[in-house]
Amino acid sequence: MSILLQKANLTIRPFVASDATSFAAAARESMATVGRWLPWCHEQFSEEDALGWFAHCEQARAAGSAYSFGIFSTENSELIGGIGLNEIIRYNRSSANLGYWIRESRQRQGISTQAIQMMSQFGFQELGLLRIEIVVIDHNLASNAAARKAGAQFECWARNRLILNNVAHTAAVYSLIPETTE
Image (cartoon, rainbow, N blue to C red; front, side, top):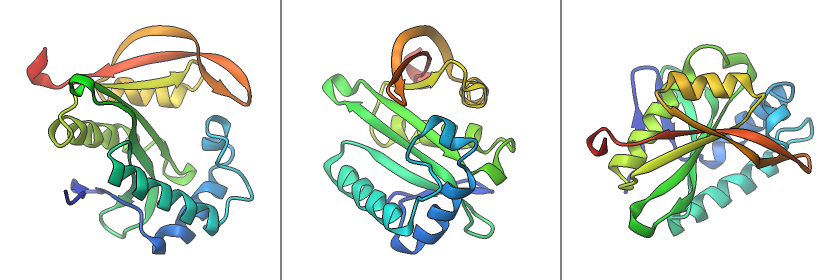
């Protein structure tokens, strides 16, 4: 399966080694925003860290256990962020979790909303999923808004659903389902 998702302004594709410098710079740039929610995003994040992540992504993709990709500008190939489907439950093609991040300099431009829609279509059409969940810590207002804007339906508040810095947090659970199953 060749994986390349593209719209007029966004390309979603697997990371390659030449993306490591841009990935590390995006992570370091985004410590104040992305780093609040994703502890891997810190000031010492290096190209070697990025290459390690890329290798993990490739192995998980080959095993069919996760599909993590970069979000790039179609116009100039700028690395904008990352998105992926993980925690895939294959029994009855049932479900996966969708996670995303956008580098700080490109936030608040509607990119996450568009990328969520693109990635969910990949999950439904290419992987045959019947449900995609987006689980967001309750006080991550930007990610909660992006999930809603992408068309995800709020289902519940789940207590102690996510752990951040060794502390359990309540999280919003959103779902996306293919249009044909409603």
